[in-house]
Length: 143
Image (cartoon, rainbow, N blue to C red; front, side, top):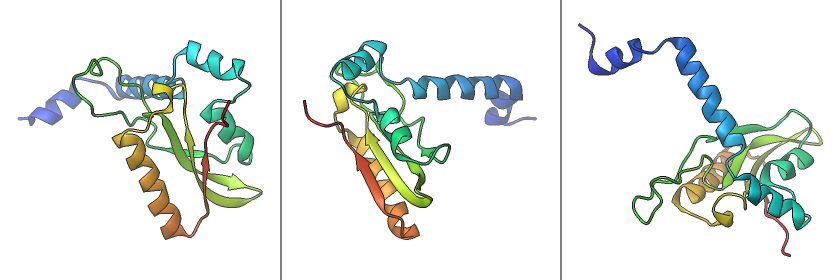
């Protein structure tokens, strides 16, 4: 007899699980609402992902914790759980040199720092320190 987790997994085909993962990743790539992205662009600012793409060697960025979400309950936050929690983290190359990167995303919660946001940055600090990579933080410039 199948255990409960195995039974639940058996009810969903691998194709369904891969499609769900692709859907979640696409949501994470566009975590901020379109009007927030437009507001950033109207101020002459790039989004967090645009800043990373501009900074790193083409195709070298590998995102970590893309599907992370805040864990706040109540205060109207239960139905507002965008992926990334407002910071993009990962590693890439700048002029061929490996670097850790984090980029604050003002399109998600106005860039407010929360628990998961801080955990993601701390994880990048620890990984960069262990790997002896430089760590580059990217914040939008002030208006």
